[in-house]
Length: 371
Ligand SMILES: *[C@@H]1O[C@H](CO)[C@@H](O)[C@H](O)[C@H]1NC(C)=O
Ligand SMILES: *[C@@H]1O[C@H](CO)[C@@H](O)[C@H](O)[C@H]1NC(C)=O
Image 1 (spheres, protein in one colour):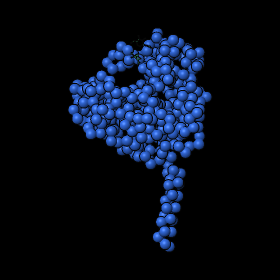
Image 2: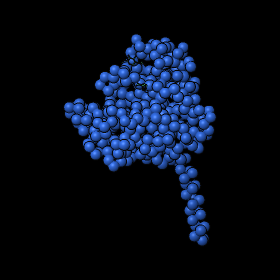
Image 3: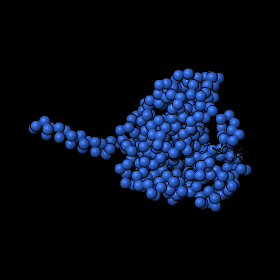
Image 4: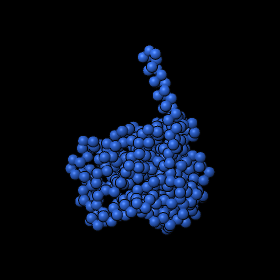
């Protein structure tokens, strides 16, 4: 055989291997098969131990990122397998990623939102293993809990959990085209078809260039303090202050950006560094990592606003206003849908106290799921 023939044969066999690879490798088992959210006794124990240590440390505890070998294997699988999903013939789906540390109180409302559209969506839940869940999962959430690790507010563990959710959803279904991060305090503001039409405008034939809906802000007053929360020059050279961004962690990422996030390591290594003890109140890495990364990597590919409404008026201790049952009304839903910009409407809102479920269900059909 001539060298030419040998290299052609080699090329052909490599191509065959690549084409067959997805079929010969076992299907990803990223979604836990049972209904019990707590990941494992050891993970829960580790989380509680870390929580105790952090509480005992006067607020200066080390970060509870806990991204272990299992996570790294998951992320590597995304790098190898998940691609960008562009060759999928099925209609694109929305992946709903619930990042929770207590009961999914609004599951009955979400059930009504999802009803009749199961073929266009998938649900994934990352429930902090230490959370005490009292409500049994409703049908759409059953068996949708991904392997979870402890999370803590204002801590890189929230970024790690979001990356875990993105990776699980990328591997689980190649048709997942948008990845909407939500919490147990979030509620829908429109019927599902309205969300779907917003994400996939009928005119856009090439779904792979659709934007990510993530808030990207610069020049906010809290940013200088947050930039130096790990030390004066800790973010250099990867993130100069001029490139540092802030935005709500509640995003809806297009698939190519979800892949980008899960594959990314350079900035993640920086943002997972714990903040200095004296800067614990000026840290919030989950509000900086995603907007900074995406604004660096694909500034033209992000909408720069979020689809999730939040009310910061009269915020207490860094928490947004939490709506109580007495505040729920048709008027509130209409107010929350409107954003400052006339170009878009909010699809989701937070934060709602658990006792809002009944009044929200009362206006679900007449207001929330009617456009
Ligand atoms: C935002 O929260 C404040 C209380 O902090 C409340 O008075 C106001 O009505 C809320 N705005 C909306 C649009 O719900
Ligand atoms: C909306 O715009 C007004 C005027 O520009 C501004 O004062 C207000 O803070 C904005 N609200 C939000 C939620 O962005």
